[in-house]
Length: 336
Image (cartoon, rainbow, N blue to C red):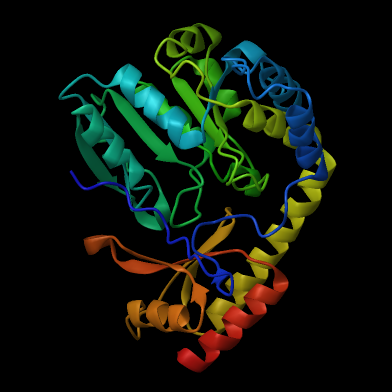
């Protein structure tokens, strides 16, 4: 099998890093205070809460869901792994869309399952009727990566009704979007996954979670690693969700810079897909984009080059600070 290849993490500090969709702003000060409390409370020598009770209660209150409907994970990738373990038998079919998150195929390969990718329809829409209703597990990233586009709630509801197995709606970037799919969890066959890496600036802490019917979460707990989240991440994640005022401020900054980035890239001749995530997908009709990626890297600016074969290639550019985007656009203007 070919393993998933993460975005490059340079060892030198002088790079402007716009390739892995990290939040350009620091986490809430409450996160740092919560982690310090763990260090001072002699909790590191003890096992953490295997269910993450405090986090579940906080998330339930903030999101308006039953705490018993929350499953914690070591990043949302851990949650996706748990779901694949639970639902995909050997030789079972895992379905998703393309272009989209490449990890879904890796998880199917690890599980000994089969993977099929369904091309998006026009304007990044879902094809209808859905061609793989028999899949044991179906993943839809919403907002999607690399496009940043979203599928409507009604289209997702219709898709869930077509499937034999569960529909997993991967909402790693949903906090930058206009709507979310939490209302669909009530259907009983929909699982929503979330990450604190992007919108809460906690990519280095590794924490994610799923929202599913409580009776399903009870069964998924049997499949996860016993202590899959450590004491530091549990405390930091709960504190991050508590500080919704800080979250709203940083979210609005990211969205404002994203809108400016889209305008500036369009002005430079890129084809830009309107995004509802914290990144922008940009391609060109007049010249290849891989040399642009390589020249930016030579100039100490990292973006993500992604090639999806028949579906084309492009640059996925994370939203940075105003100053980082100023420098990116200035360099691109001289390259293109």
